[in-house]
Amino acid sequence: MTRNDFTFVDLFAGIGGIRQAFEGVDGQCVMTSEWDSYARRTYETNFPLDEGSDHVFNGDITQVHAAEVPDHDVLLGGFPCQPFSIAGVSKKNALGRAHGFADPTQGTLFFDIKRIIEEKRPKAFLLENVKNLKSHDKGRTFEVIRRTLEDDLGYYVHTRVINGIKWTPQNRERIIIVGFRESNGFEFDDLLIPKAAPKVEAILHRKGEPVVPHDEGRFFNPVTGDVDPRYTLTPRLWVYLQNYAAKHRAAGNGFGFGLVRPGMTTRTLSARYYKDGSEILVEQPGNNPRRLTPRECARLMGFPDSFVIPVSDTRAYKQFGNSVVVPAIRSVADLMRPHLLDTNSNSTRVA
Image 1 (cartoon, rainbow, N blue to C red):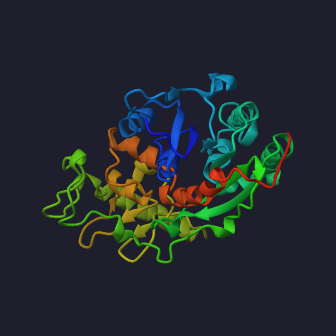
Image 2 (cartoon, helix red, strand yellow):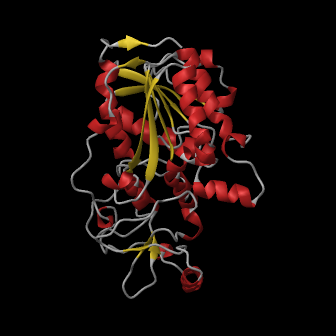
Image 3 (spheres, one colour):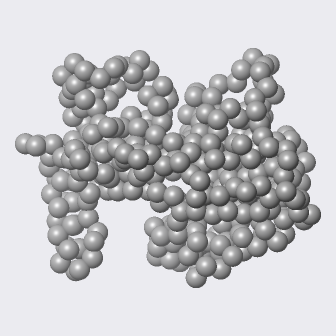
């Protein structure tokens, strides 16, 4: 096996969006952790182990002893966002459940990141979460995270809210937290952002497009360009969504469906997309609008067509809705890479 430029561990890995980005800048994954069996199926289909690989796959990170984690240069973690997201907080409040760090199952997973960093002392880390993390609980949640990473662990921490709309036609704001063990001049201001942002037609199925072999005609007919009719909303559902939107407009709020056509961008793809697809509906002149297909969702998140979708549509919608905009993370990985390879740093903190 060829030794790559640096190694990383992929925690809360989902379907591997962050891994795809860091492998793209010549990083080597030495450990993955993901507890969801369906996400793991997608992950392992797309990242099969090489013969003789020493890669480790763990399930529940809470059951992994920090000392057993392989040595690595970078820790990557898109830790669960539901305890901090606007939608997640609203749902938990409605159910009378705790959120943020008070959530007994998801909110404390950040501290599993802490104990691994404390034990293994990687050169760097990248953490990803929803934009709302910074304002959750009036900023107290984020202050705990910042204080933990900077004061307790001694890392130089940089944060930036990045919108994936610069790389794919989707309005998707996420906070990226990058930390280095040593001071090295890293600045988010140096992030390379594409000059021309794509529009939704860039990800939609079109007549004559190359056939994706592993899709096997699952989503659309490449000869006619027709998307499978099962993605078109039924008359009953379309009437319901229009009535729902009208009701909320009358009440003075913005709830409703998001209809897109060529030249536009989309709302944020969420894990609930499988329910009715209301946040992103594709206009079909002369017909009811339709949902995106899972392949179009993959493209909206920046996954290449070589990425295999081995699960049902429902599972795929959840998985892509929970993933990252791959090219946006790739740009951050590009920015981090020279600092990972530079052994001549200015100073070292002692935690």
